[in-house]
Length: 196
Image (cartoon, rainbow, N blue to C red; front, side, top):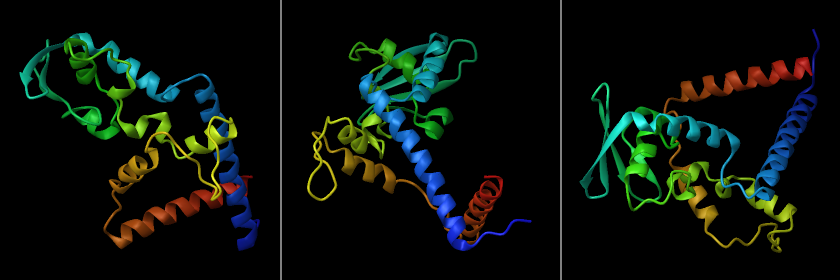
C-alpha cells in the first residue's frame, strides 16, 4: 500500500482543486463571451420543465398568486410572483430553486410576464452573474477592471446578494453529523490521491 505524507496529500488536493477551479473559470468565461445568463445545466432543466407546462390550467387568484392545476390529476400548486423571482410551493422548486413546470405555466398565462426564459424568472442562485468565479472571469476577459485590493468593481451588487444567498445555507446542528460528512469527504480525497 502506498503511503503519503500529509504535505504530499495536501499538495495533491490543492492541485486537484486548482485544476477544477480553472476548468470552471474557463467554462464561465465561455458562457460570458456567448452572452449567456445561466449555465447549460440550468438551460436543460428549465427547458425540460417548460415542455410539461401545457399540462396545467392557471387561474389568477390575485395578490400576485396563481393557482396552477394539473388538468388530469387535479392537483393544485400555488405560484407567487414576488422578488427576486417567481416561486412555487411544489417540492421540485423547493429542492432546486429552478423554474418548475408550474412556474413556466403561470408565466405563460400571466400577461404581465414577458417570456418564460427571462433571467428575472430565475432564482439568483442560478444566475451566472452570482457565480463565485464570475468576477474573476470578467477581469480575465478584460470586461471589468481589477481594483487595488485584488477585488473588482461591479455595476450590480452581486457580492451582497451572493452573501445573502450563502447565509441561507443550513449546516447540520449535530457535531457528529458534521464530523461524519467531513470524514466521508476526507475518505473520498484519500481515494482520489491513491488513484492519481
